[in-house]
Image 1 (cartoon, rainbow, N blue to C red):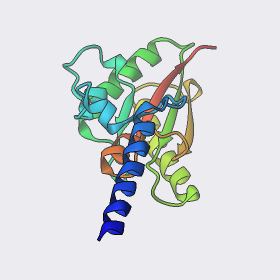
Image 2: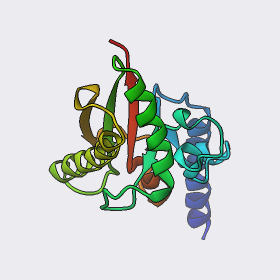
Image 3: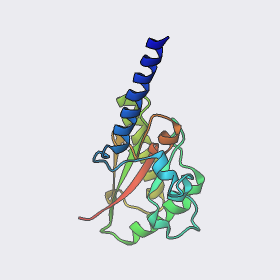
Image 4: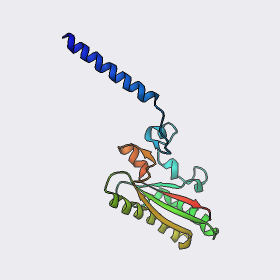
Length: 169
């Protein structure tokens, strides 16, 4: 009985020490957030990135989220994409990069193809609304550049996205 108690106390001490090290460790260099990081800033709802056309300047919204295994653009994003298309088509020297991303599930090849389908679906909408084909480029990163770290739906929902990046030339 005494040895069991001693074993438990040693185990508890090891766990407490490990937790102390984790709590005191420096965060490594990274530009990624966690889902918990985002929830503290009112980003529980993905629409705050690229949703309603009524919440501020639509040109500030450059991230568009997708459902699992889908490249279908959500209707809520169409007004924001139209605003980008109008802005770009009015400026012939403007150029954007449309970047497709996926969550970590699936093979590398599958994710790159899905990211490309997502980016191309956004590019088609922009082109239909007046953006010239020379004003945009499409790239897929697949799961290589996650926006949020994590291995569950709370992270994956932020990684299934397309980002519009304005380029200066």
